[in-house]
Length: 183
Image (cartoon, one colour):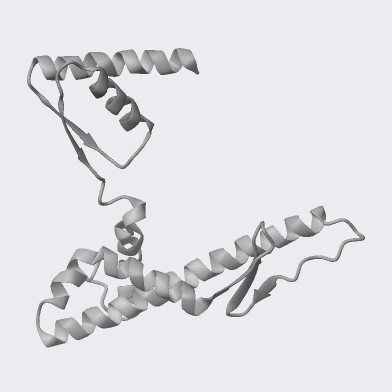
């Protein structure tokens, strides 16, 4: 680990010094990661401060654009609007005629419902798998914890014993936030 750290640090030091010497800016795309830490340490060791511009990757998964965007074509087609293929088109439709706004709102609601169903199914499956694993781990003399999956509600027991109830309505709120952030 130390050899790898020193090798990468030396490489980044060379790049930073070359950028400073040639008065170049360094452009870094993406979110926080280990490479940025090494770059920061290297910049601090440099006698002159390099100009470093960090741009976050807006189309990454954590910004929900990609998730929403991949759901738009299927949801739009289910409603009879196969020509709507991207979030960008929904955005343009929202600032267009009243008819386009109404269609965009229908598609938006359908995307939210489809994403809620898909996420809920995934949550339920993950919780069922977790419960199966936990039942195997519980000693035969112990009483298994009170948790489970109901049709529209999950009861999840945390490590500290706290029971959290997550409902389909809660999941829908999350999907609405994803849609709003993508638009």
